[in-house]
Length: 605
Image 1 (cartoon, rainbow, N blue to C red):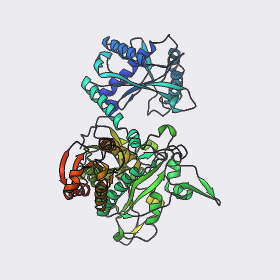
Image 2 (image 1 turned 30 degrees about the horizontal axis):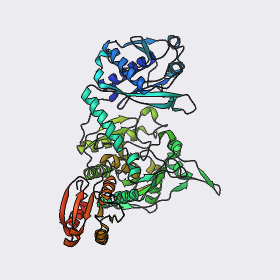
Image 3 (image 1 turned 60 degrees about the vertical axis):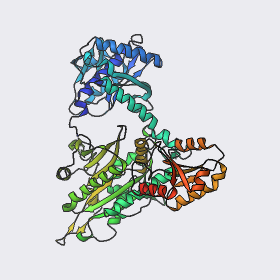
Image 4 (image 1 turned 30 degrees about the vertical axis):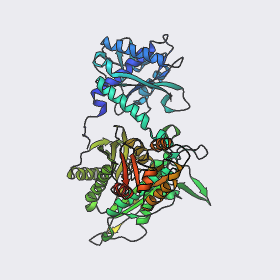
């Protein structure tokens, strides 16, 4: 379990270091050009570093990066103080008269406290500058006291990319320079290792190399096509989910891919979620939508028959396909897609059963974490923002406070550490989001456990309680295995494509040394298939070593090499993906080993 940190990143020393490094980088880049040539936009800290956006007379080059880093270290050595000054809008405009992007930001602040992203600032109306050396920026801070508090051995420029001003493709495209900064050189070194390892493990690269998924322009962006190997991964995850959910008392249902608009009007999704839905379709005067989520249909399944307290808790599960219109700039491999198969379920329960049901979902998380070897994770309790009631959130403050308190109590009683994140709840209730870290320390948002006090009432759902009175149930929305798309993307990177045997699309490859052993190899593969093992014999014309390399490139866990000696003795020579070799291994002994590994869903070979 990860250590729970209560300090916000925005309040940390590392945030101040990175924010200050962004200013120093901008200062160094401006010095490459004549006064007035370079235009500056914004330069915030981000999760692992910082960036700054520039409108420059030419594109930056790798040689520029060397010069910029050298100049940044000189500025750091100069121990330049970061000095804040609050100014009037008029003075700010005069200072940045030749900087159009800064002028736009100043106008937003002057008009009513709008930050650099066009979002309202909470009570923030002042306009302030920060100056270090001869560089002044429009900035709220915070910063280090002076540049000497930044470790010159722990900074590095990382990359450059195009970015539209304020994310609007109709606005100018700027050059976004990314950098990173850490407290120590060893932390930087570890981060750079992680970046390089993440590049090698990139699920888009490995997904292509391992024949797991593809995209096609004629199909459309964000709409993945699963190749046979990807189909096997999906089947294995569904089998796992069905086994676990059966033990936890779930019943499986199925719902259509589209429905009438009135269903989403009633659920509140059209009011709160329309921008993420595909456009409506008109047929015979009726408006239809492809579904962005399954919950409204599950509510109708609950309502199909009268319920009493004896029927509850009712747990309805479905791997339903949903469609969400993610912006093209936000699509990213399998992590952000427009078509997704969700490990969805909805639990309908009385308030008295809420805690046990909610914590049973948390227990399910832990089962999955153990199976996949996820050792670091954090539970985030996302709550509402009172300022967003009636807009971003259902307008019922008493129920928000009540259900948030119920979640806190359940987590506290269960001894589950968590952090609170205000303003990130679902529109209908608080939720637990689960952040997990892969084997190399890369962070993913994977699972969710949401409380819904709104939709059951909106759909008029009820059950007869012990007193013989109708009562509205609570609904828990949960997706411990996320979507197939996000989960498989995570697992590709977590395992670097070296899946555990039970999950591997191809578990065993039989490799004959010469054509004379082809019949024996084919018979072995058939024998293993009959035992439920995904095996095939490589009967191609390539030499044995080429066949072994091909199997290794596809990350096949077990390779069985067979020659004349193995045919004569009825054995195999085992080579594992990790380099283990066992000669003269009895077929029955190997079969038992691989079957036990698969049935136990072992992580090791």
